[in-house]
Amino acid sequence: MKLTKKQKVSASATDSLANMSVVGIYQTVEDAVTELLGELGFDNIVMKKKYDTIWVFAKSRISIFKNIAWNETFYSTCFISSITNATVNVDIAIKSKSEELCAYSRVEMCALDLQTERIKRISAVGIADRIMPEKPEIDMAFTRFDRSELPEYGQVQVKYTSIDFSRHTNNIEYVRFMLNTYSVRELETRPVKEMEILYTNQSFEGDVLTIHRGSLEGKDVFLLQKEAKVVARGEIVFENEKIRRDI
Image (cartoon, rainbow, N blue to C red):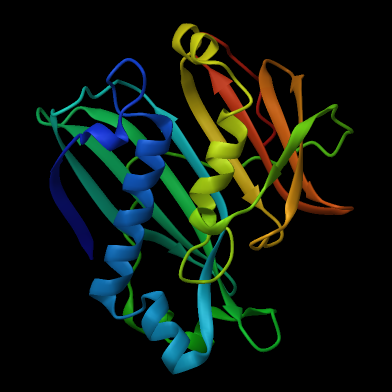
């Protein structure tokens, strides 16, 4: 099943240049994924009631090819591209009114048992029995993140507006935490072309996260920690910067 929606770029989804922002793209991705799961009958409200389980994002990646300006029409197409024993990959293509590909994203999800806090097999929640994965529109793989030490940038405390239905920090908040280490000028002159996040542990209201940031092989890399525990890793590639990926 593919879910396609016609939308317009809202003011709340734009950046300082009035284009759809990186956060706006991630919001579109999250909304598309959750709506698709709702149409399939596997959204988190159903999952929690039926299986005492919730979906959590394990990885997410976006590639940006062309800007979409405020109030412009665009289409988002969302579909499941692969299913393994422990993960479900969902792809989202964002296209202009003329059907030109403007951004593409892949999200890897796991089913988290709320009692044991362990990952369930996908077969235990029934989605693999009902879904036939669709062919991806482009090749996209997740990165093997570097584990080297990074300099500390600062700290941020998780507060009410960062918490979602699952009572943990919403995945988009980590996007904000990373992007907020830059100035407006920096991101206007070096637009983000790719961003990827690996979510390794949950964080919750009141947690203080330490943000580490450094540069490696033409990209900026991030590490977010709660005390000694790694919560998330990320990387950003900017326009006109080419890197070698170890995939």
